[in-house]
Every structure is written in structure tokens, then in C-alpha cells.
Image 1 (spheres, helix red, strand yellow):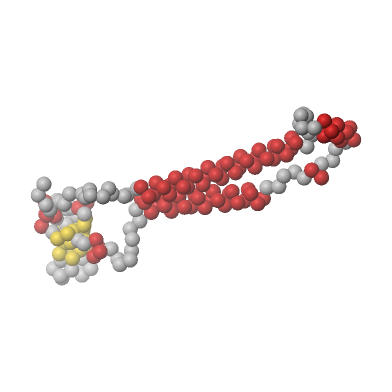
Image 2 (cartoon, helix red, strand yellow; image 1 turned 90 degrees about the vertical axis):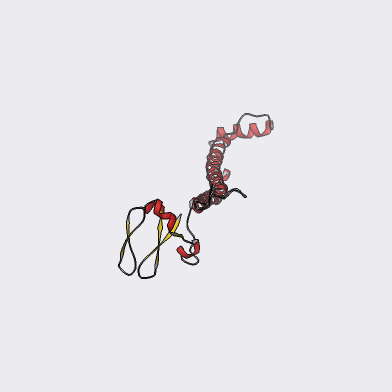
Length: 171
């Protein structure tokens, strides 16, 4: 809670309850003592607009979560895009098999779909597995970012109809 401490020059200095008993300096150079907790009841409360600069918004936990979540989402999407556009499967045309392996491959192809693994499927399956793992990492990073953004929408939000009690009003 912010209160206005009057100075002899006519200016009001915004002070908070946590500054009770401390000394503050006015723009005119006068040093004033902030009253104790009991003395705050005699001071005028500061309006929130008069303390903040016009157009300046205070960064709270909600804004930090939103910024962090958005940054993490961007990182996850960049990783996913990088892996998507940079991944190339091994080219079958460049595989060079010795004649006996090529003959075994030809016989396996003639047998049909119920066949053991072809020689070229091993490197391809390995490359595909690595690609899927990295895409899963990128998706997990993006999901963490989305969770942070969703949390930012919930942090700092007050329930409607519930206001903090006014310290100046009777209980």
C-alpha cells in the first residue's frame, strides 16, 4: 500500500508501509522521517495513477511467465523447423552393395512383404528414429512453453467479487 508523505514545500512523497521508520529525501532536499505503522493511518493514500508514470505498466509474475513461455514456444518451433527442413533420409541410390548382398536383396524383394529386414532398412530406420527423437524434444519444449503461457493467464488473477479489505474501514 502506498501513502503520500507531505513535505513543507507542498509536494507529496510516495512511501510504502515497508519504509516505516526510515528517512526519505524530497526533491527540494528536505529529509523527512517516514512515520511508524500507527502514523500511516494519518497519511493520505496514494492513487495508483499518481505514483506510476503515465503509460508505464508494472511487470509482475504474470508478464514474466508470459514472456518466458513465449520465448520457450519460439525456441521449440525453431527447433522443430530446423529438424524438419534439415533432415534428409539416406539416399537409396547411393548405397553400394557388393554383388552377393545385391543378389540377396533381389531375392528378398521377389519374396514379397513377408520378408526379413532389407539391408538398406537399418540405416534408414536409425536415421528416422533419431529424427523422431529430436522432433519429440522440440514438441516437448513447445508444450512446456504453452504450459507457461497458460500459467501466466492464471497467475495474479483475482477472483471476481473478492477484494482485499480496506485498512481504513471498520472490520
